[in-house]
Amino acid sequence: MKNFKFGLLGMICLGLTVVSCSKDEDQTIPENNDMAEVIKEIPQKVIDAANTLELNVNFIRYGQFHFPDGTSEERLFFEDDITMTEAQLLSLAKLAEESGTRQYSTFNLVSQGRNISIIGYTGGNQALSSKERTALQWAVNNYNRLSGVSISFTLTFGTNYQSKDMVVYNNTVNNPGGAGGSAGFPSNGLPNKYVQIYGLSGYDTNVNEHVITHEIGHSVGFRHTDWFSRQSCGQNTNEGSAGVGAVHITGTPTGYDSTSIMLACFSANEDGEFNGNDITALRNMY
Image 1 (spheres, rainbow, N blue to C red):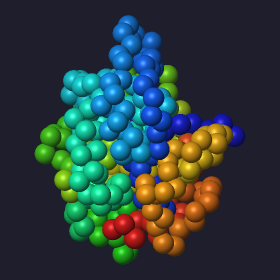
Image 2 (cartoon, rainbow, N blue to C red):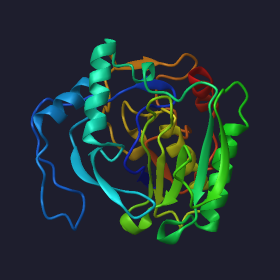
Image 3 (cartoon, one colour):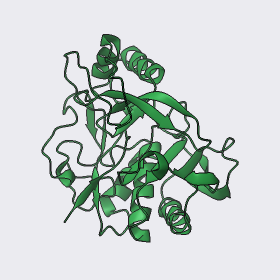
């Protein structure tokens, strides 16, 4: 079975409330972009901030993050799973130091009880296809049908995303060689706003639903379930610390959970649904 990596982001896993581990040395990392002409050195303050948050800096790089209106901004990318601006990284590190804890959930979850406005983008070359719109509706249904979870979603489709809490759009035009998605993390009680998917036209609606549900999961504060091994990707790489950076959520497994929707990589046979442990984790967090 061929597995595919999720794109650029993610902060907290269903089943574990954690942030990733890192190395201490300076690194100069090449852009994962064939058009990139300049390799930008990673400054020590960025590495120090990433270490404070226990983010993995093995593959840290600068790159362009693209928005639905065609603009872009420079962001930091960590192992294709986490992306943020340098200012966001430094701010998070400061909060972690001031709080005396690295437990991400202490200051970065969506406000309890919030109804999240989410829009599927339908404009230009980053519009969702008909299949992707259906998958987004199914993904939103995954969250809204759960009892005992305080957050909920109101879904619309269109191009007026500026006033919405979250926008889901197809960014294949800027990721022509990959398949998956990317998302950010909550801040100030709000979810991550920008959710990208790309390269999914050849997969069925259930796989599209899986990827979108997964990326929304990151956007409300969850990280990969297999953060400790990336086993779903055929790897054995510890992304995080089992010390102060990881807090197990009661009622969820500590080992590999092969059917979680929050695994780091996905296959072409996904059904797009939460498993029981995913639901338990959501209920514990919200």
